[in-house]
Image 1 (cartoon, rainbow, N blue to C red):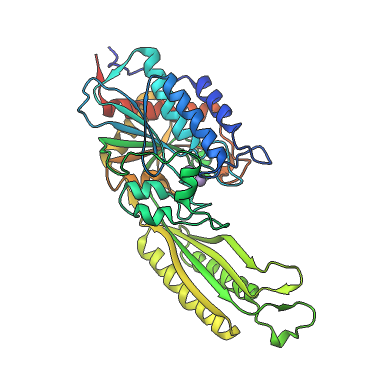
Image 2 (tube, rainbow, N blue to C red):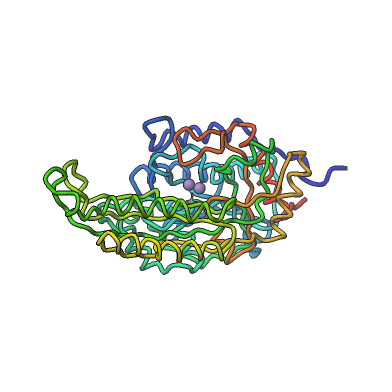
Length: 416
Ligand code: HGY
Ligand code: MN
Ligand code: MN
């Protein structure tokens, strides 16, 4: 005799259709998405998600960081809810599934439970976390970080984008600054479904990643100053070329990461060159060094070596250099009980699975500080993400959402 809900499956076609519908909002230029945080496009995506949640009979709460919480009642209104979600904001050249799969996968759980008339003891809350990407306003996972008490709201509101606009002002401008106190909500547990954004699951032929840990992240913003001068008439010995200084520092960044192979990684994705004119030697460059490792001591070593080696490079070249830590979090160990619920769900459903350390950061990494949390991952084609060509299969999306549903429902408790 099957246990209650043992054979429940989500509607993969409906999930896929919702993913494709959301992908129409904030389209990129090459088939992906550019729905950056607290832009007008983000606002439109939020309204679509809110409409879908209302149609599924849920009530919506929004906190002062714009985090969205769509609630399906349980039979015990006093029981702490089980949360499930991710983020709808994307990279400027983002894919259709990074974050979105986790939010719409959560919505699909509710739609399926409604179809089946299944009740749970604990309420279930589907969540859209604001500004997970940290592209327009650093750092990544900004709003889940405020929710978890890692950042103050005032500090978050003052974060500026490239044009000097403030996060708090932009959140208010798009009309999604809620009135709920951020962080006041208490959770029974939180689960996040996310594409792997790496090559392991596909290479191993596994449907499901049971995420036991998340690697740590460090973002150091580096400002190198030299002297603007003419690229044609300035003799080589007289140049104070901040751009060349950056090039040598980035070579050092690469060597530092390689020195901790096979797990550590390092690069700079954000680079601003001033005055960025074809015939002016750059007098200033600002860039962000992104180091990551599952091992905190390795991250700390890479950060320390960056400062020493970059300082020497600039001293030898007569350039100025400043460092500012603009983001980071320690390696994460997810809750064993929640991880086991994910693994049991994959087993029960007959999906192939393996333990995984998340290479990317996620809102779950911060929420894990305030509630038992775990993640479910599905493969993505060639491990590619943060690229408009990001792709997954409907089967992978369905398997991920099935496992997510069983882990969530098992934790929320089915009521006969
Ligand atoms: O940076 C990250 O790992 C995440 O994709 N925001
Ligand atoms: Mn993401
Ligand atoms: Mn991302």
